[in-house]
Image (cartoon, rainbow, N blue to C red; front, side, top):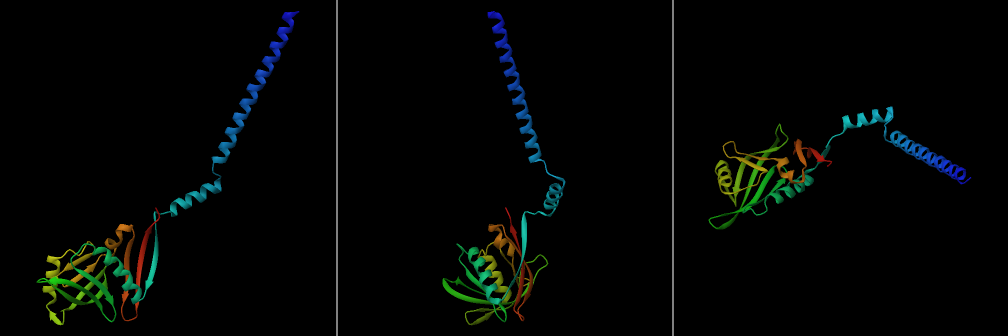
Length: 205
C-alpha cells in the first residue's frame, strides 16, 4: 500500500517537473522571439537606415555672409590667437582698402607700421593680400624690403605666409581655425559692395 502511494506521489512530482520544464522552455522561446522581432528592422526601416547612412557625414557646411565690420572682428579674433607669445602685434582692417597694421621694435624702439593691400581669394579658399605700399610711422618704405625684414625676424604663426619677392601675404584661414577643427574657405571678397562670403565646415563629432 505504501509503495502504491509513493508511486503516485512520484508521478505527481514528475508531472509537475515536466510541466515546469515545458513552461520554462516556452517562456525562453517566447522571449527570444520577441527580442528578435524587436531588434530586426522592417523593410521600410532598412531603406531609411540605408539612405541615412549614404547621406551622413562627419561634418556639416555652412555658408556665411559678412559685411566689413563683421569681417574685421572675425579675422582679428583669430589673428589675436596666432599672436600669443609673439614679439610683433598686428591687426587687420578692411575699409576702402585692406590694411594690415601693427607695432614692432626696430633698434629697440616701438614702431608702428601700416601695409596697404588689395585682397583676393585663392583657388584653395584662402585670402591673399597684394601689397601696394608700406608706411613706417609717417615714412613710406620699400614694400619688398619691409616684408622681407618681417619674414626673417618674426614668427607670424602658421596662418600667415609672406612672399617678399611677389609682395604678397597669404592668410591661411583653415590653419587659423584648425585648433577648433573648423575649416574656413573664402568664396568672395568685394570691398566696393561690402560683400564677403565664406564656407565653414564644422565637425559633428
